[in-house]
Image 1 (cartoon, one colour):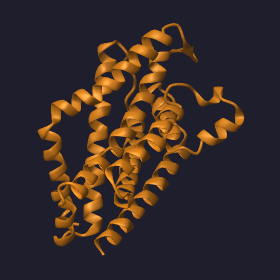
Image 2: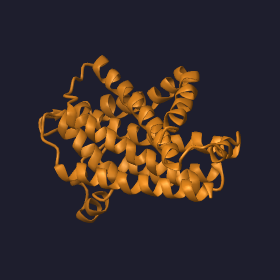
Image 3: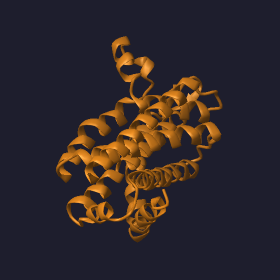
Length: 244
């Protein structure tokens, strides 16, 4: 496990090199969503006595932490297919568990960075929510699951284009349908049952409950933790197979 920091530090150096571009990129979508949905469509919409902006912001954090954590797959694919750095990792005395740990922590860092940007934007428009320990725990579990999933899938795809297809057909739909922009209890029963199996649904629900002063459902945390363990174990396995 001693090599995990080298992997993590490399990703931090890459992030530092293009920090302002990354920060700007992470800000564009939340600003568009806040303007289009928060100020445009949801100006006079309320949910259980709360404004739509108060409902929307935890969902945006959940979606952004998911997409940015999963985006670590792009950096892994660049290292594999273009820079051939993964071949150096294969030759180096770095355990596959350390490699996965470093990449997952890098995904978590990206997720936290994007979340802090959204929280900062929300404060500038006068929306102050309760960002307590339950909120950060749900965010962390959500990011670690999707970062682990990203490492796993990045080892399985054959090209950078295949990774983009996974993002377009898996991550993007989950971001819009997982209770981020609307409460899923407004959907038909069959749709609610389908959406209730998505991890982002439970992450958004837990973060929203924490932000609005409620008590999140313990089941959501148990589910997210279990999914993270499965995804992390799968990532370790596929990295080991790739090295073999």
